[in-house]
Amino acid sequence: MATFATSEQLLVIIDPAAREADGESVRIAKDVLSAGAAAKVCLPDSPEEFARALGRRGSRRPVVIGDDHALLRAVTLLHREREPAGCGLSVVPVGETSLARSLGVPAGAVAAARTVLDGVERRLDLLLDDSDGLVLTDVTIPPTRTARTIAREPVSPSAPWYRTLLSRTLPARPPRLSTVPSPGPARLLVQLDGETLVDLDQPVEAVTVTPGSSGLAEVEIRPLSVGAEATPVRASGRTVSVTGPDFRYRADARLSGPVRRRTWRVVEGAWGLVLPSV
Image (cartoon, rainbow, N blue to C red):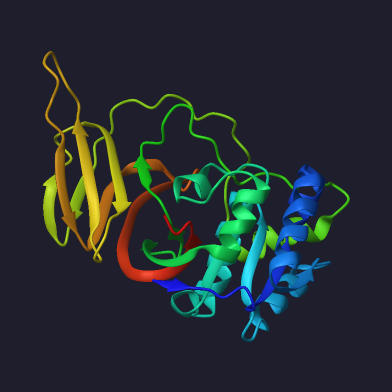
């Protein structure tokens, strides 16, 4: 856990979608940060500038003002630099921010900006899948009926570079879906560290994988209940593999798939996020 001095230099990267969605919140956050620290503000005009700004941050601590998509994009870029473990990231949520809130980032521009200045860096585990995709919170198979995807079209159609940025920094995704059709029971082979938890002959209602603590993933399997409610299967381990007929899954509110096999492994203390000190 690391604390920060207000004299520390910040690199504030303002996501273009945040500027479009809520310019007033962006202005407030920028004013609070500039008043409390030496802040260099970056307004990227191209995907290369966004990546270059983050890559040339030097000793400056990066702050992203944006939505959940911007948070995922920043962590993905840092991961590709093999730097998330050595770089504490700060976020001021603007726009769709359910992911940031679930991680403990305060809602509201003022509270979040003050956390950037006065908060502490906490080391967090994440899940890394076999396609090099990152998961910060959880994976759900099949995706829930109302699962929203943050893989969306850019806010401004006049900014084609933003669409290019999304395609370059995140894996390919299906078109935007406001809701996911209600899935039926799934038949899946779920293995934890090579040991079978459930086989294809046992239909399940849902499988959830969450990065826990100390390098372990927490797995919960809800078998299909007939009559009396079935007892969930819970276990912890480092590597989770799911195999079965084409299935979709929700990871950090993104809808992915269909795939026939996916494996996630835990990376312990893989990244740092600045959160409130209490």
